[in-house]
Image (cartoon, rainbow, N blue to C red; front, side, top):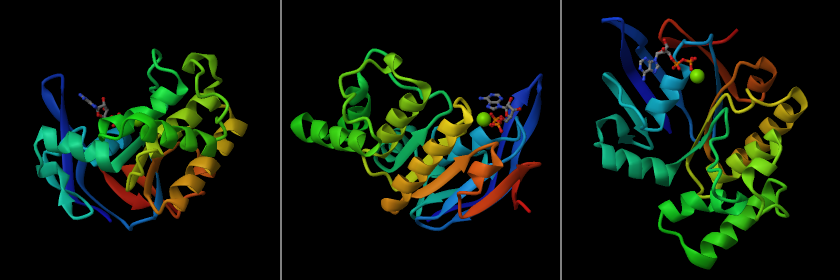
Length: 223
Ligand SMILES: Nc1ncnc2c1ncn2[C@@H]1O[C@H](COP(=O)(O)OP(=O)(O)O)[C@@H](O)[C@H]1O
Ligand SMILES: [Mg+2]
């Protein structure tokens, strides 16, 4: 269960405050998939950064499974994020100096899973995304779609309760985007995780249980 109530966040812009989120409410049930659309600059990434605890709200509550993460200090938020959140980015954000398997193993090591057990789990996850034969490849030797599959494996390998995706297909061609979203939703649903996905693409958004639009700092059902 994910619940936001009265969440506001402003940024200073040329000396005055620009209120990006303005009393935003959102409730997402466990295992529900929600898509968020909205024009560029409407605050979609800001919202995801608040959900993952990268940023804090100016006011309002952000509860993930009953924990008010906005109220936690930085170390506790980092620990919460590592343990319970998986993130998929538009530009993949893979570590170029690590190979495919090492990238996927990283979240496990950050959670204290090491050695053979960590390698077994990262290899199994890469198998699930169809990259079981690319474990030792350099990430920049892969295509964009393959890199995003590595990123999906990395986001899910530690079995997070919440998966957040920020325009995960924004950098992929249409056919690869469709495959990638299908893979992401299938894997997230098979694990009973809750998905919040930002996308411009209404066809991709339609794969979610619900589509919301972020406008004027608040979310409303998209008709
Ligand atoms: N760290 C920041 N500092 C200052 N302004 C920011 C920061 N993050 C976002 N903003 C501003 O907040 C608004 C919303 O940004 P963002 O959440 O990235 O929108 P979206 O993801 O919908 O395109 C923009 O006007 C952006 O310039
Ligand atoms: Mg954004």
